[in-house]
Length: 210
Ligand code: SAM
Image 1 (cartoon, rainbow, N blue to C red):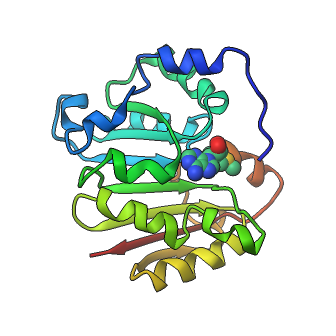
Image 2: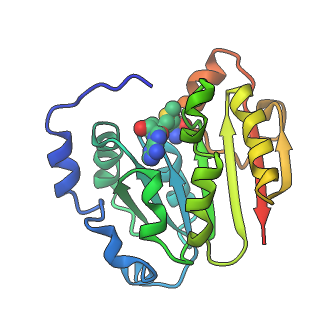
C-alpha cells in the first residue's frame, strides 16, 4: 500500500480523545474504558475507519476497537469519529504484532478487512493471517476464537484458508463472490468500495476455534 504522509497526523492522533494512549495499561481491563461489560470486537488494519465507525453506529450494544499501524492513515478515522463521538468505539495506533500485549481474554471477534497481501513468498509471515499473527491473536480472545476476513485478493484468500485450517480453525462460512449474495448485513470498507466499483469479486471467510 502506498502511504501519503499527512502533515501533523502523528500529533493529531496522539492528542485525540478517541485514541487510547498507553493501551497496555488496560490489558485485561478494557471494560473500564467503555464503562460496561459489552462484548468487544476488534478490527485490525482499519485504515480510514468507515467499516468500524458504521458498525459502532449500527450496533451500540457492542464495543469496537480499531487498530491501525500508521497515524497518517488513522487520522482520517479520527477526524470522522471526533465529529460524531460514539461511546462504543476507540482507536489504537499500533502494529498488529502487539495485540497480545494489549488484550487478555477481552476480545470476542477479530475483523481483518482487505489486509495487505504481501505477495512475495519471503514476506508470507507479514500477512495478517500467517501463523506468526495467529499466535499473537490466540490469547486475546475471551472464549472461542472467531475471525471474519474479507479480501479482493484470491492468493491471500487461498493462503488464509490453509493457514487458518492448519492452525486448527474450523471454517464456519465462506463466500467467493460476496456481491452475488444477500448484502443486507454487509458493511463495506473503503478498499471494498474501490474493488467492487472495478468489478472485482470479494471473498469472505468466517472461522472459529475452541
Ligand atoms: N481495512 C481497510 C479497508 O478495507 O479499506 C484498509 C485496507 S489497507 C489495504 C490495509 C491497512 O492495514 C492499511 O491501513 C495498513 O496500514 C494496515 N496494516 C497493515 N499491516 C498492519 C499491521 N501489521 N498492524 C496494523 N495495521 C496494519
